[in-house]
Image (cartoon, rainbow, N blue to C red):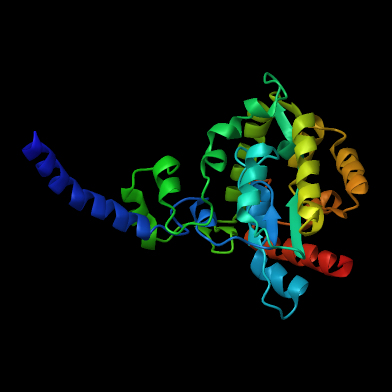
Length: 307
């Protein structure tokens, strides 16, 4: 038995060493989320779902909001499934925020999906689906390499970390948390992506989701918490007009709810809904990166004027 254990241990050491070496080269191409859990605690955060993750670029916002200081934003936004407002995302934000922060700036991107729940689920945080996903599982959000995340939540074979390491990719997560998507923007490709996205939302999401009082309350709680550490700014990012029509159907009074919340919490609200035709979209609800620069500039200029 001792011999067997010895041989097993000896055999396992090289395998473990290789796996650890692979973990050490994980980077912004590994997946859409990993790099956000490998950076230090932050003082200025961009929060929301995938629209915020792809649209709001800290590199553009920083010099306008912070001028020549060393301060900077970190984009800690994820996806419709992983970072709707609720306890799981709230707790993750608390872990990512430097607790010593007193004069931080927090941009919270809001949309109907971020305060919605499935109709067949009780409006109870204990039932929220993200409780079973990485946003709840990942307790260490400032660890590099983040081995717990890679062991628990990385969904692909580890060999893919090596394959993606130096390969060209249409998806790169930057160290400031911005998700860069670089896809063909020819009219046929754009139309195809938009049609697919519209079909997906009409069939899979619109009939299934509705307003969640609990998520709305959690958003208010998040705003109140962040106000203890600085100033909060609410933003509704632009999406294609067809996608806005879908959002209006799932939550017709969304803007009224956010305006009311902003007034109650005394925070400004910037709504891009009437400017949706000014920009290019890769799929209907995510801006092409060039348009993302324009929107990031607009958001930054708005915040600078409000400070």
